[in-house]
Length: 441
Image (cartoon, rainbow, N blue to C red; front, side):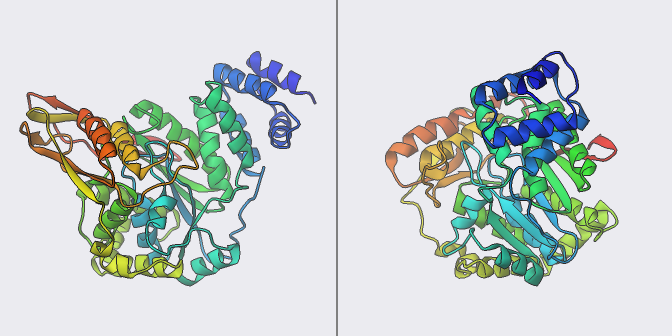
């Protein structure tokens, strides 16, 4: 088999066989197929497309290109959730202990943040002492003992995806639904969960900016997961503004603690409870979403979910005193308010710009090896639909140097747009996707 023939076939719009796709993934991962030929095939795929069989095969071959986590030693159905990335998205810190407290094993591999989006591993590492690198036997033992463990992704998890994405990023071949879906799902399939719930973001702070694009991606990923024997759901959620009220690693941990204590932001609670509900539904713990939400409300109200989070933090080496008393964490040197430039109703908040403002404060990475300051970030006081007056406070920047405050403040303030007439609040959830297709809510 020759790569030249595979490229030619796709250039002409022909379907690739399973054998051809396997040949490409294995050869490229092994370094036997050069970048220039892979780039040509990726461009042909962008122009001619892949059908669902081709996309599913590509996903599985990418998943098999490295370590396939064997979770068979973990008792019961294992559940996982994945977000396509957003600003202020701390739902894993809420969802995982809730689901685990109801008896569902959550064995989760998570990543770090890059650019304007945050990463679960960075948030957890803001807890003093918390370990995100743990041996496989300890990971499995923790899930069996207490139903929950979260660790950083293995360097050898879907290496074909890592190589392909690096090439797509510099050859203008990122924005193809099949390639995006296979990239995300290859890592989820390699992570070994039986039930996968996808939080597909849509809006200014998301990779997919429109509902239709987000729904198309969600449908493709759900189909791939179900085709590969994993019960898969997707929830399409808003990222036209920050999720919750805080952006920044420790600040987001603190906000997650508030929700686990039955307090906190209502929109964050709704999104978290909905994601957790689909995990319970997929694992057969609840017979309906309504039943799942009742179970979640009970485990939060009783304090069981919060206790599970404490247990999880302690198990992975974290200092639980910071969970019991978040105010114990040292504060940023500077707390600088940002004020509205004019009056009116807030009509839009560019979530990506808010994320970039947090990055400028030191709360994110422009490059993978950048160091994050865990205590800096932003508090968002005003959301879409709120009435504000000129000079009223929009939020607060938490920083450790004045120069970053000036740059971030300008970016944060500019993220807001105003209307002369009332604007309705943004719905946090737009719809969901199951094996029967896309459903708007």
